Image 1 (cartoon, each protein chain N blue to C red):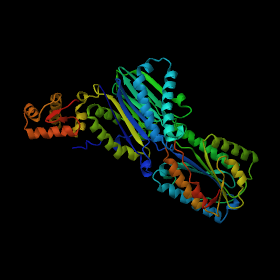
Image 2: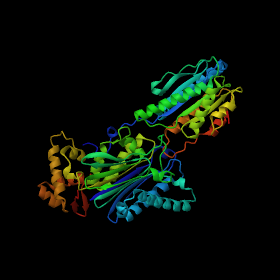
Image 3: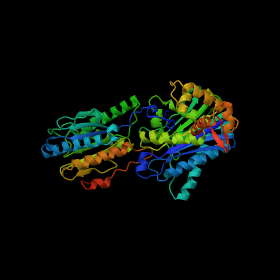
Image 4: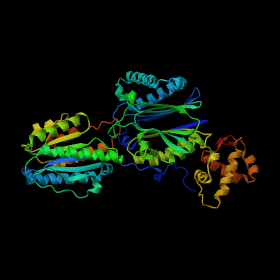
Length: 328
Length: 229
């Protein structure tokens, strides 16, 4: 029911200096717990890219194992302390391996975990966590910066516990979550109004209906061509969406479908083409051969194949041998 | 058909204001600066403006203010980015050296600007104060002490970066040192303002691209050729 995708891009500044990307993302599906995590390594910390990876791995593992326990623990401070101690223990182990200090592994942490009808959000430092509820994009956790824009709190900071946010709640009326690092937030989060760019909803919708490979490809194109060019910082994003929600294909209106298929909504043939794609996607809920689809559509095989190839290119249809199918 | 491979287009992005680096140049324009020193200082400031204008990031992030101290301390340029202050001010020498009053005025300007950023939701970097003199302060002793205390408190609480610069052999390096608990003052070799301002603009550029947790290492080695530490 929940689908996730994530992407991280090395910023222009780090590309120039051949420094590794310090943003790390991780998606996890273990013990029925769906998790997306993102960490942004501290700029000058030598191994912050390793620290960011360690923190996302440790946080995902801990939430997968202890989700129910954390959810039912009434004492919020206890939850924060246990989680932070677990993260710091993982980082200290990494310090020994790398023979470095803890601050060399400094990073932020953003995480959303879903189990059953509940969610847990964890946030230390900058970056933004948003969600979609009732068709409205909302912000669950804003960036924690110091007075100056290039200062924030890290997992390794002395005041990490004090500034750490842990939120719990019911996920039943939430359709999707988004995590973004500060580099991405430069483009998709209005700092003054504390609102998310409307395009985030479109990203959630695409995540819900497209194949993971196709969605990753779309994120890669958009980040490399647009988001990365708007900042010097590394940029990353993680999306976790409910594919059976208002984000599913059948809930899309004509204009949204036109945009998905790359059709002009004002063109006179677009309605006919969208209708045809609707029929094909519906029919392909069970795997079929080209001949079967062609007969059903009453369309020559070569035309049917062209339509199928288009849907395949868009990540809406997959093939297995001679069989075509769609699970949107 | 439209390009279906580009999920996010430029027009989909929010417009956040560029985070600012407020820089206050607090410059000695007393009578002793008359002649070549003030001419070289004018040329240095002009080159500073030029270098900032030529830098893609610094052009939008650097906000320059200039406080001079000659007859009376005054703000001759209030904070704005290069776009909004295309004309480089012309500094003229004359009068005494009321350094304490000038630094207090500069700090007041920085505080006011920071409050404006906060009110308008504009992010900013740690402000910079560049203090340049060729002599010794001869304004109010109390104002000087107040200026030193305020500056040191801000530097120690990491709310201000200060660059005290001595010009020529008569500059009172002991007083300049009192403004800077972390970094020793620099004495310019000769009148190498141009080199100093070129270095300053590069440092502004690096700061304006820094990210959380990044310590901007100022290239002190690069200064050594034209200044004494």
